[in-house]
Image 1 (cartoon, rainbow, N blue to C red):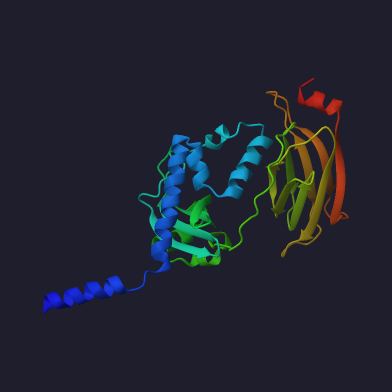
Image 2 (image 1 turned 30 degrees about the vertical axis):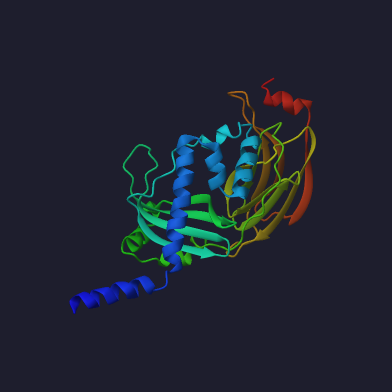
Length: 294
């Protein structure tokens, strides 16, 4: 009788439908393992097979804009990608052709110091019938001690309430391959209380929100006129009277030579803001001489 009950239990278990979680998690982890192994071995062909197409072009454009070699620059990372071994699996979710897998524990990037319990969220895009790796978002929970306690206890409220931890269902379009930069440029924005969108030379698109950040200009700057388009809007909680700055810097390739400020649009506190605009800066012989330290 006991044997019959055991057999019936096994049959019922095998006949039960397999959940999406049961099939999604191993598929995503297999993709990440292949991608990580390609990174460690500097295997370009396998990296291409495992990486989302739009991400491949995005990385190629960024490297070219920094005048770094492609594909060799793919593998020039400050730290190796971490292993998932020893981490606590939290969940895997999919929406449309996007998916995310979240893990908690001692995420080890192989740098000095013992790793502590933190969160890592892996993003994937489905191309054809296969999942391709997109990116990883690491969350240092040292500044979120309550979230660290919740995740350790299996409480996933933080993931539910954090849009970056949920698959969006939106697959970014594959960008055009940008030209390799002649002059490395960065766009810098200071915009407390505001969202600022900037586009340089109709190629490099940037979005900043309540930020003080700089990003590399895709395609870099060119000789002669360069176009800067911007659009500004107030964020919830902002007063609309804050100071704001948009700048473009040209980065020298000569050691010890400081960046050259090529463009600036600045609003003083309580100043009059132009919500949208198209402006230009010119890269001329005098500016090039400064970049070369002459």
